[in-house]
Amino acid sequence: MRKSDQLLLQILKLALRGEYFKEDIHPSAEELNEMFRRAEEHKVLPLIFDTICHCPFLKVLSKDYLLHIKQFALNWVQREIAQTNETLNLIEHLQQQGLDPIVMKGMVCRYLSPKPFLRNSVDEDFLILPEQIESYHRILLDEGMFADRPDADLNKEYELSYHKQNSPLYIELHKALFPTNSGTFDWWNTLFYNAFKNSTQVKIQDLQVRTLEPTEHLLFLILHAFKHFLYSGFGIRQVCDIIVFTEHYAEKINWKVLMQHCREVKANLFAAAIYKIGSKYLGFDEEKHLPFSWESQNVDEEPLLTDILIGGLYGISQANRVHSSNITLNAMEGKKNHMLAGGIIHSLFPPIDYMRNLFPYLKRMPFFIPVAWLQRIVHYIFSKKGGKNAMESVRIGKERLALLRKYEIV
Image 1 (cartoon, rainbow, N blue to C red):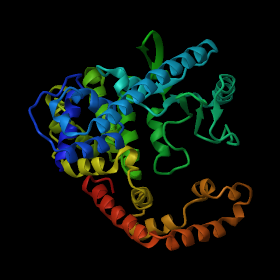
Image 2 (image 1 turned 90 degrees about the horizontal axis):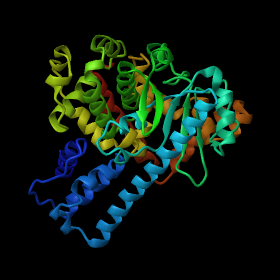
Image 3 (image 1 turned 30 degrees about the vertical axis):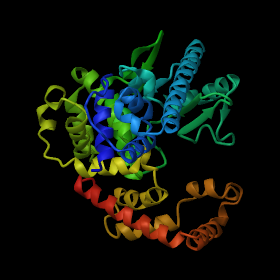
């Protein structure tokens, strides 16, 4: 592991507990630059900067660069404050209209942290009852928001997103927690069949907000990270969320149920590796917070940590990583024979839902899908780096497929 990554994890360990960095170390300007770059890739820069802003070792950086980092972190904090306030106002208005969405992930995890606004979110996620989608859609539009896909069929899409111009407010409405058009993920939704019946309330600022009950929420955090892992990867921020949530709710978690569901989706070793990362690098006390049966998992967490650090938030630090997801998803769908070949074929000939985003004419003329495939392949191969990128995607896909085998996922 590079020194810059070791430093990032050292700082995160303290940041999760609201502490400041006090060690007498002397990183180089290059190592600090790389550490800040990695922090931004993982969207933890405000946390990192707040924890070390007083440290003498920052003097090796130019004043202009340090000022840039400081301003960047402050901008994220200001954005987070505005987004949180606007989101809570929206939730309160929805509640007054008889709607009560389940709020998940970022907003809830943020308020378990000692300094909530340092944990930034790009969007806020609401789980809603499918039969209420038209009511939500109407109210969000009345509130001045815009649908990202105004022509989407409200009753067919499992997920819809809305933004507000000149505002950080960005909302994702989920009629299900995982994609309903995927054989790999759709059945995971059955694990949350009673989400609304089992839901609970948390107080965020001065508002009572509905959220998932602790066992289901922790399971969702793990499976959400697992889903992104199966695509192209996930970031260290999601590890932090899982660790902080577990520390706060450990006594309320039904560990027997949680571990059983993780085994059912083949995420048990994956989850054990996350907790080992937390234990080894982020100050998580396995003995205190986890049942013995999970603590004793003999799992090697280092390959997963390497994959996390390289990938950035949601594994999108490199385009070739994203393209390689076809190989891992193809393997996850149970196509054990010719996994690699099948994944490459899927990369060359993606399904029409994916292609519609690249070639809008398919929305009107879906029968032109062969033309679109050919257009995509020609552009990819004959672009300046097309051949090199294709080979790199295959290489990354093979490495990540080996990672899936290591954690007994395929």
